[in-house]
Length: 160
Image (cartoon, rainbow, N blue to C red; front, top):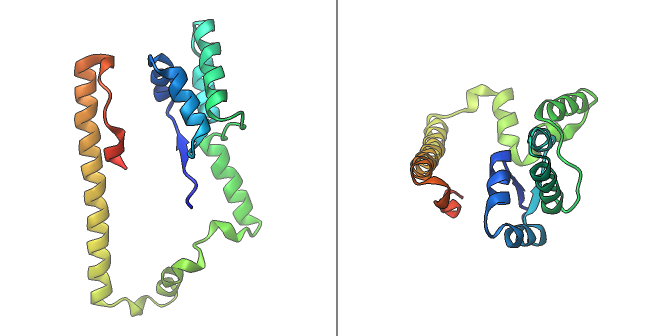
């Protein structure tokens, strides 16, 4: 079973907070399989909310969503910790043995055949196409959402 982590951008937290079904959605999200993660960045942004009542309510919602778990650190702090760990010899930072082919190629670049290159090009092209299609879907929904106001809710399932 794969553990699913959900990370909300602060603007999504604001929209969730303002949704008429907010309490039900928060209850569902905090009691379902996905683990909702809140970051220090979310807390920093929410803390700048000028309306004290809203700020408190947003922070309380963030705490409920994350089931009281501590916020994720800032990206820079995570990178710094990772690099320090790597420098100290943490092997978790390197490519796993499941990707031994990558290590083999680095050590013997001459083994890359034309067939392997074609396969990689095809795979990369497919990944790029999926990315472009996702961006296009998001872009059209975002434009429609902005045009229709806050009542429009895109179907997020189609992006995943």
